[in-house]
Image 1 (cartoon, one colour):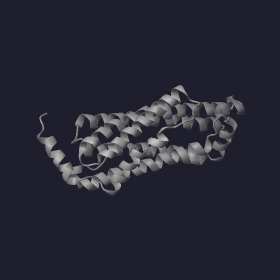
Image 2 (cartoon, one colour):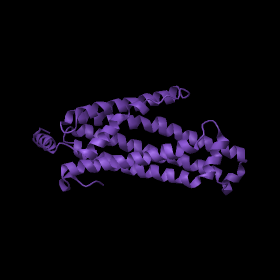
Image 3 (tube, helix red, strand yellow):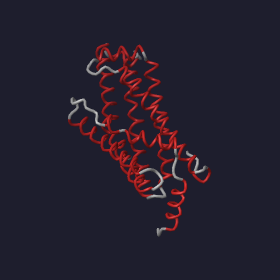
Image 4 (cartoon, one colour):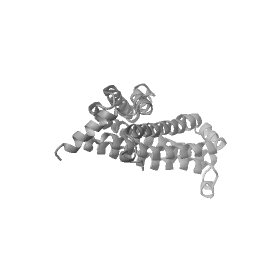
Length: 243
């Protein structure tokens, strides 16, 4: 998936991880803010249906962008694993496992988005429903997607940042402050899960204010990579440590 660090200078490998992070941010941001929040009108099934039919290709492109972003997410987490396994291999493995769970849920959940458009596009099987019924059914599928994305998958979007934060704080080759901000970002996502599940009408999204750690990590990897000497020292320490 990602070139092993033995084939790349460590700083170049870290910057490659930053590139994956940037692509993930672009794809995810476009799918969420450029498509879903633009086309879906909360509480108005008719307006949402009209938007989806009028901008069907944009809606489909949003699905493709989300799929691409999730593929890149896998590449990113394995790149981070290669960087951070020298700090604590088991925590690095946990980080990868949590991302793989998040990716699997997110990708499967996109079926609900596709189903919403299939209900509206007038296919043969959809002829059994009246137009108003199709609009409500499409909104139902979009609601399922919203719950799957904003509650179920987001549990893992928050959790994976916690071992990542711990690894960075202990690493010595990425600034500790980035790790602390990542822990705050993870906590923000988890609070949002509770709010969305228990108080869906509140409308407050804490992660909009706590996601800064992810931006800091992405920016640091792109601009600085890692402290190569400190990384090599940690690798040497890991190789000589008892199993």
